[in-house]
Image (cartoon, rainbow, N blue to C red; front, side):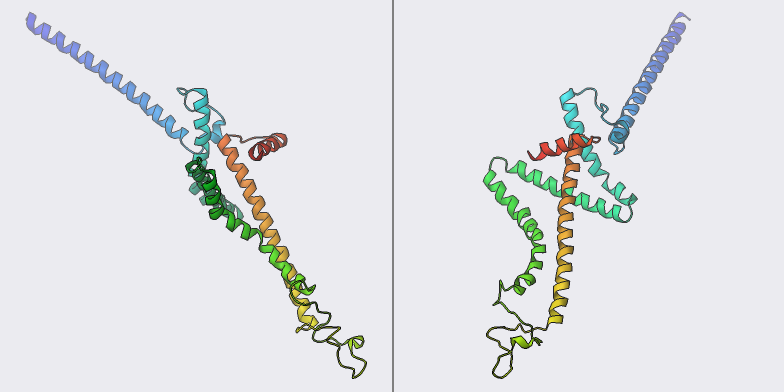
Length: 250
């Protein structure tokens, strides 16, 4: 009987130990689950929007935490592109699309600079061949609108003073009354057609100049936004914004 009672007591102790171990395991599991939930939330694209510059990893040093947070914010912003794009409509959707294109190009430039950081000469050559030529050609598009005015004022062809339908009697010769082609050379086009071409050319020049200028300004704004996300500078006054832009280019 003593042995049986001792056996029951041992079984009870084992049961208590198992119960304690099981409770401890549940507590550890719940703790890990909370950590996982927190980690998932902090990895979501809304974490930084709701918490600003709050600390997302208390076990890292301040410097590493700030550095990782900055790159994390930019990465999360780019990761949430599909979510933002699906919510946009109209011009906002177009803006979101081209913003991603610009951010990807900036990333390509950064990777190229990092890859060739020890060879600046090759870096300049690669950069010019990949981005410079296309940008220069795009910037020169409006200048094609200057061709017709230059032709009109005789920079590309011998200067002309009359159109094909010239009816000015002072341009005629005194002998037979025919047009004096030596002193008043004609262009093989009538004045009405030339005026129509000139108007169309002027409109195209203004439109292309506006498009090119707007594109350059748009790229500049998105570049500043990229750097702000990278540096975690979401809210700035006008003065701070100007200083930040100055620090990027000087």
